[in-house]
Length: 177
Picture: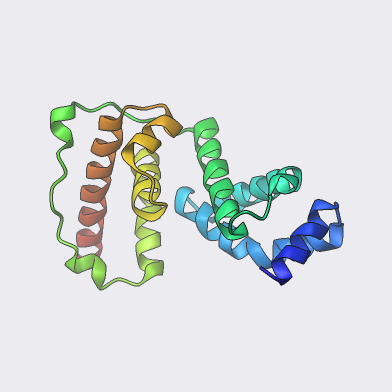
């Protein structure tokens, strides 16, 4: 951990200068996470600010037992989800019979840059985007997603299925233009 450990320890001792350095070092990483959940850059910036305010309060909880980046990532995901929960996100229960996942061709997606894909994900409705990010990008399982978001596992599965279909359709439409 080296440099990060010393920096984090200074932050835990409430050093303003160390916290500013920590912000400079990790804000691009956290902003990228926030941007995946937000509708636009301004909203991502708001979530980023919330994350670092929370970080100032919670940095003393970090015990150097795992990677700081992983700990910070989990915090950023939680703050992003809290922001969505407080501002607008809702999930629609869909009949469990409708939640069978279909194989979706990934040829179009494999030819996209990461920035293009993130931009397309950002256009998705909140529920789709949240489930897609949590499952595909963050690696949560449907059971965990259901518990975190207070929805059923079948709703998580169906939202993911719909998100994939929506994403493929958006990308196809963009390439037709």
